[in-house]
Length: 276
Image (tube, rainbow, N blue to C red; front, side):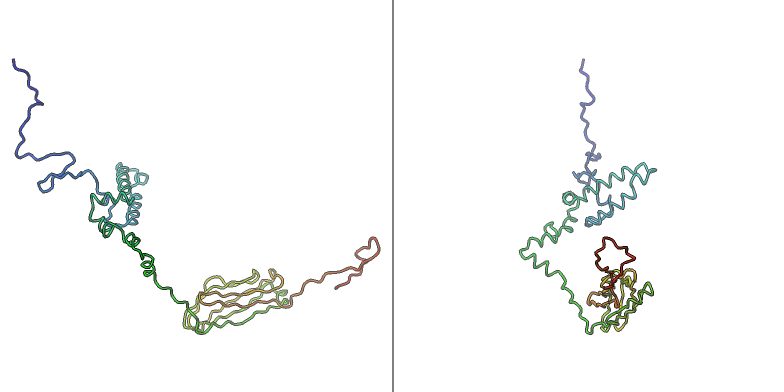
């Protein structure tokens, strides 16, 4: 009696028309390729070019995540898979070392375009030069020469005086100031004051060639303090003008001095006050 033959031990001849089959391989032009086709193209996942910069990849990643995030797509059952695939792509392309290793295998041409000669960046190549400081200094543009007015601006009036009697009669005293630009340039500046009891305009003031800027200042009576001296300052990039402000007729309050007496106590109404 013959021994049973196992069907699994039978070797069947390969058909001449059968195609080669290999897990994780693909056939290219009749040849068997060993490149793993299961690795996704991260650039296609993020929808960017292989030579995209790091900033472009980061912006594209954030935009795609806002679109496919599971929290924003609760009705999409594939939202989690989409977000995971985008995260995996950015983990590789967002890290310079991982991106370099990925490009060396899948996109060698993109690495040569990004890195330049020898796979290195432009600035990295310059840093190895002995005269790198001179190279950087040569690329810095020259500093623009400071503008000097051919004729200084005209301020009217040159000084402002406010009498104390005016401040006693009205809570605020207004004065008018004019600044004329006599140069061929355009002058832009701000107005400031040195004391809080002088109020000036807020914002930029601009005067073209031959133009005049006019504005008012106010002296607030209840805020004036001794000695009553302030300044109005017009500050521009090329010029600074100062207008002194002075309060005239300002006198300190006189105090009463009582003469000495030998009495133990003298009522105030019986003393004769002496003003000094």
